[in-house]
Length: 312
Image (cartoon, rainbow, N blue to C red; front, side):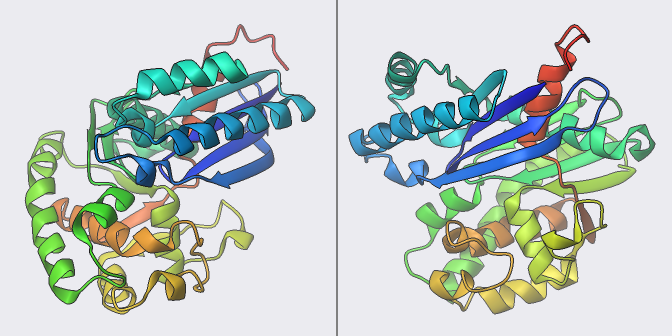
């Protein structure tokens, strides 16, 4: 069957179309992205701005038309922290449904962590053993760990790259003082979660997902995306430490010129790198393996698991 997944994130609205059925590897057929930066369009009162809501409705409608033209049998639409954090989320979701017919489901942070974990588990298989998965989004940081497809531990904390950029940096590039203060603050914020993860036992494999981690790994010397998803890519703590010293002195415009960095996310790369580094230190992990599957693939796999096995 052909499925469409519409991911309404903090920065972009991403339509991923795949051909998939139970027991098979989902094959991407089309990917379309629209930059909305919804998280930056929350008013001081916590409500998503009228212009932001207008753009979201228009973008969802366009994605629905694209999915129909591409022959999708089902369109699974979900939103993460940007919509989740909006005080008028209910109003916005109602409007999206009324004007587009698309039911936009808001995922909780824990649900994000569980679905991302499912994707990583399916990618690496049972041989990965006790698997620890780390994911940095625009609004939150997700961590999950376990030996099955459903993690024993799943946690989401509001330490996303975009959120930290907005709340802790006042200049571009951030000042040295802001970087150092954020580094210390992150250590304190992540420590309690790291202690809970330590109680889950020693992981057999530790992996990271998301565009932020992929960009950081690429800038640290990992293979480019053109090498394919099955090439092993890693992010090391020494390499990330050196990278932070380099990119923290660069403006967002300059960062956007680097290979592997998208213009829509360049402004939050430094914050994302600081979150990644603080997480590695808190978990005592000198290396993270980059998993090519993440939340969207988890949503697809969960949908396929719910079929009767006759879809093709």
